[in-house]
Image 1 (cartoon, one colour):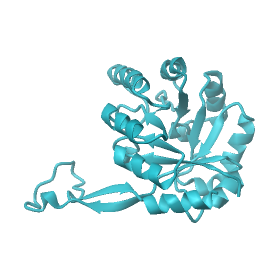
Image 2 (cartoon, rainbow, N blue to C red; image 1 turned 45 degrees about the vertical axis):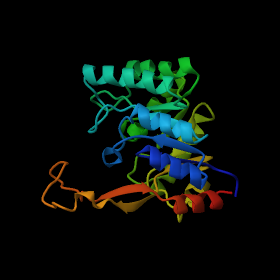
Image 3 (cartoon, helix red, strand yellow; image 1 turned 90 degrees about the horizontal axis):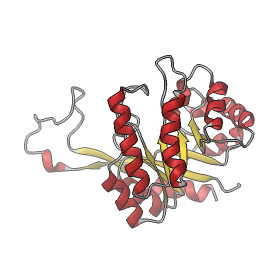
Length: 249
């Protein structure tokens, strides 16, 4: 099987370091993966860059719940993008839409230009999976010089939308990279690669970890009304990622 680049979605510095130890090629560094990934801290980016030689693209997303932000939220995104680019990010991951779901050209250009000025990559994330016309969106992103698009083929799981991802890749015709993600596993990744024709994939692979420091009072919760377990967290599963790296050649 031809070598395929493996990008791991990471919610912390330790996630990314575990992915690097397993042999992953690139990390997408975020915070708050429960909400689809938000902007990571500068500290987490600096630790990953200091501890590894892995490429790291950093998420620029100021809040959960969609991709059409207020003026204040966008100002935060601009400052975050500048800080991430100045502190070693190899790329910025972004996605800005209008209320009707179409690409916000001006805001996308502003963040992409921050990346271009630093000579780093710009990546449009899965916001493309909710646009009304992905061909129109790709044309806009190509015109703006975006490096790559992450997509699930406008389905919740890319493994059922490989035909759409292949069509995207063929439509792009080398003008922009197309990277499939969402729902890729050790079992289906070879099929996804074969059916899409793509040369890179994006996925998360976590195992459950435990922290019992809150066990003295189990009636206390620090989060919202979903009340997640306070003694559990997730960490990149190094063994699973290593198995994927081996399988990818």
